[in-house]
Amino acid sequence: MTRVLVIARSAVERAGLSSLAGAGGLEVAGAVPSLPPHPDADVLLVAGDADGVAQFPLPAVLLSDADAGNAIARGARAVLPADADEAEIVAAVAAAGAGLVALRPEDMAPLMRRTGEGTERLTGREQEVLALLAEGAGNKRIARDLGITEHTVKFHVGSIMGKLGASSRTEAVTIGIRQGLIMV
Image 1 (cartoon, rainbow, N blue to C red):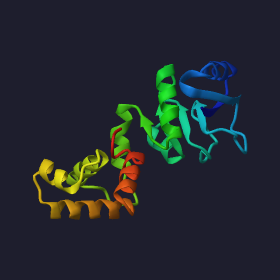
Image 2: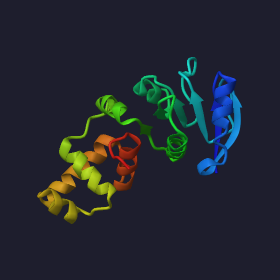
Image 3: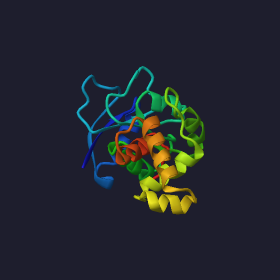
């Protein structure tokens, strides 16, 4: 069960979102009009623009038409339109609880352009190698699939790990997923 704290200014919104209790393994830990100092939940489910919240203290799913990039920068792990349906919300809460990012497809492109601020961006070839790493491919398969040598694969893997600050292939894949570089 994922414990969710519903945060919405409107009592109607709080009641509506609280009705998700039990759906997809969600347990509603409470419904409040503003963020408490020490929320007791796994994920925050926030309706509206969440003005005044400088940084979310827990993974948060934001139901808003706000700029996804700014919401992600404040700590939101998922941004959905205010009129998202139950299945979308449940999936986003599950993703946020697992440390993943969930966004609308139209929000991905602008965010991808921002990805890498403060870090070096991956090249197109490095993104291909990272995607194959996420599939569990070894150097031989990556070399065969991309038509390059195993030495070149090793070079790309090293470069990816350096750019992402990863100490292993698994960590590189995990970071790539969290940054939205790999779609799952």
